[in-house]
Length: 156
Image (cartoon, rainbow, N blue to C red; front, side):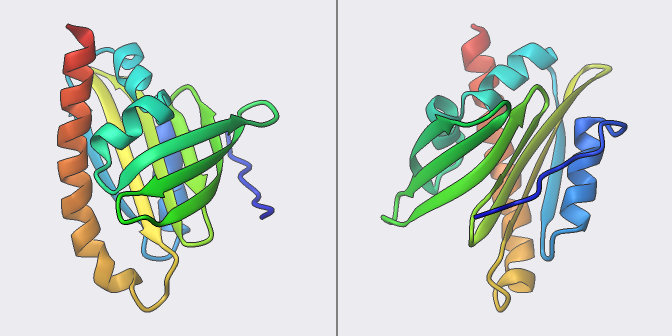
């Protein structure tokens, strides 16, 4: 799957996430300030294989294969047995993954009081997109609760 994931480096990662979400039909963004340094927050976000299945309940396992530079190939196995392959970009403060059926994004920037973390996502299934948005907002808020808990646990 050829995916153009070029980004404008003039935007900070959270602003870039908002732009990408706005350009992606049905994409939902949820943001939260986590009272922890950027390095601690991003350590959880960047550990896709170890941490993503801990805060994203539908993912059982994730396998990451490095590509060129900041490009990755990611294979996710869901708890319901579904499997998805993602083209991904991972760099400090930025993670964007796209499969044939879904989009996953994380972005973080240091702010006063901690780190602003944004979570974006969408289904690419046309008939489900608009119906999914309210469910995704609630699911992402709960996911950020678990993510924040992982940051606290790793900092101890």
